[in-house]
Length: 269
Image (cartoon, rainbow, N blue to C red; front, side):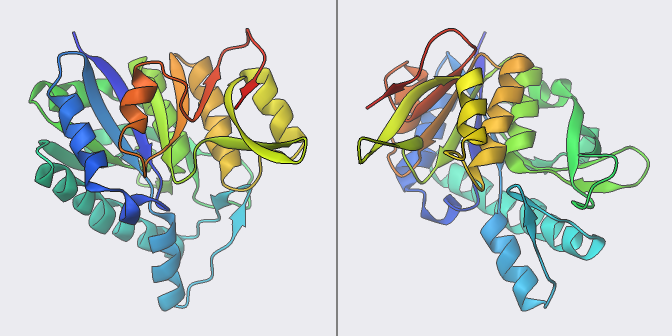
């Protein structure tokens, strides 16, 4: 039986990913070992369209404050333009892909991220209908998921893509890999910038508290920690500009940053 790997593609890299990245996904789909599932973002495109429409947008701890007006644009960009372009890119590379959102088929059961929050219509996933993902995968397709979800009562929420990816990976007991445009998490050591190749949950929290991890990397790392706590077997942050990064991560090579359950100290290189 194939093992799931959930691949989160950030909006900041989607327009720059090389053809080789999509070919790697296609190659994975055609193996007997791995079943890829993609969860994507689209932040820069959302910001661009909001600016064109004159809708103000702000962020708190790396998450977009979402009003009803902002949510309309979020759904238009994520579930429309970005999702379908990803599907097309995968099909061009030889993969069979199926794009949908967390609203479709009630894939995600969602509730507000916080009960009282200035984030507005930002949600978290409380349940993933894994049978729907299993069905799509069983038909030989790569599920491509847009991170919006509903609460079953008519309210739709914007879900941070990293948060959604971690929820999907946890529900599937999958590997989780964040595709970025940098080679993992960096630190300054002895006046040199180095990549942290492996860190534990406790160390990751310490890095956030000490402000070594900031901005949009915060929800990514916190999502990684949530995933590890809910069944994810391994989490990586790798550079998608290098087409071999994902297969190298899956093969256990020292690539990018791997975040693990508490057991060892961090290693840099």
